[in-house]
Length: 176
Image (cartoon, rainbow, N blue to C red; front, side, top):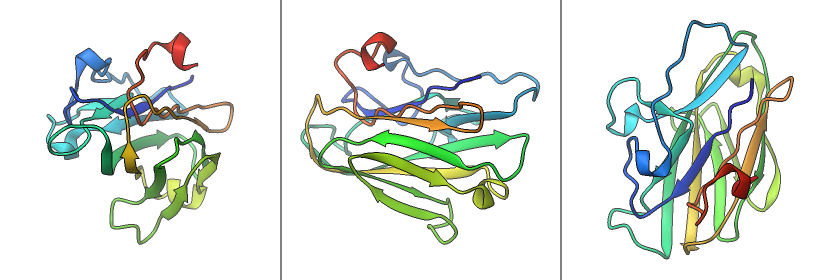
């Protein structure tokens, strides 16, 4: 199985499910998976059990571009094996940085900043104990049209795509 996840900025976005941006609640069946990952939206004021493969946010309290600020996305993952590294392949646009931290202030997991292109790893020692991590994007004067992408591979080819900005064409054929 492969899960493609996207994040981004859009003037029409909310903190919850935005159907106009392709966000929808995930419905998980019985636990017959080796690994699953999604964005947990419930901590941002959404209904209980709101999770999505996409997490678009409005850039700032009064949405406008260019945008300077920080957007936090809560990754939630579950695995049937312990100690799996989560490798995040990323391409981040100029003016943006990515950090990955734990939900308790970065005291156990605090990696980054990541810029440009590369691989960030959430170590198996962390994933064997915890099922959440924050993907934090910091932007400095980001304008509409800036693009980025990421993928996560977990043993046997698991992938995550990160789109921290809303592209003019969000279709899979355009993004991939």
